[in-house]
Amino acid sequence: MNGEALDSFQLDLDGASEFGMMVVLAAMMFSVALGLRPASFAFFKTEPRLYFTGVIAQMIALPLLTLVMCFVINPHPSVALGMILIACCPGGNTSNLIALFARANTALSVSLTATSSVFAAFVTPVSILFWSGLYLPTRALLTDINIDILSFLANTLLILALPLLLGMTFRHLAPKIAKRIQTPLAILSGIALLAIIVIASIRLLPVFMALGIGIFILVISHNCLAFALGNLAGRAIKTDTASRRALTIEVGIQNSGLGIVILLTQLGGVGGAGAVAGLWGVWHLIGGSGLALFWRWKDARSTD
Image (cartoon, rainbow, N blue to C red; front, top):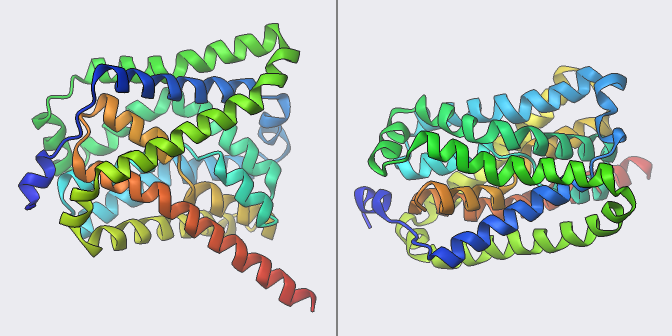
């Protein structure tokens, strides 16, 4: 499959599959809202510099770094779109578990994941269009696949922001019920998103084969740079080790399931972008877990 064929390769969804993906995504955002507590926003007042360092690193610095990567390595347009798409997604809930295992600042990790998901409901669609528009090949690709910008913004806001607002309202009106159903709903939606990643990866096997080892190297390099960016952000403000680890994990663990759903339901399912999102969804768990194991090994050595 040459570059032109790769960029024109699309995963087609029937109406039922597209609706199902939207339902899963809406359930995920609803569960995020049910889990929001005043403590999730405590870092606004207690440690604003630390909190906003994480927000800026994740929502501005990572897309900017990704854009620079695209200019330097000049990947296929659809691959570049996938890189930008992932960089614009919020952190994944898995980051909280990895942060706990890594002995990181778990409270900071939870706060950044929760609030970045809130911001993402309104910022992600605009961010995807903005950063993609700054790179000529991805801007041309979006034009070729005839993306209706207003429709894209409206639909993405609908499936992200509306469930979030409904969840926050439900938690306010029925806090006891919200507390009871939040964890099961979050687990179910998380499993469903993981299933989406796995199924999409299987369906994208022809694209993986066409891109060869290069796509694996690209995704691993992109993810490693994301982890490094979070770590450098923590070092720049001279924060403690636990908080630096949390920033590293939050920037390196992205909600690739969200990226795949947006790609398949709103962006035409272009193959190269799907390959990046699918591989990222698998690799960042491996990379994040490996990093946590390294830190625990390092801690054990320092206490000997």
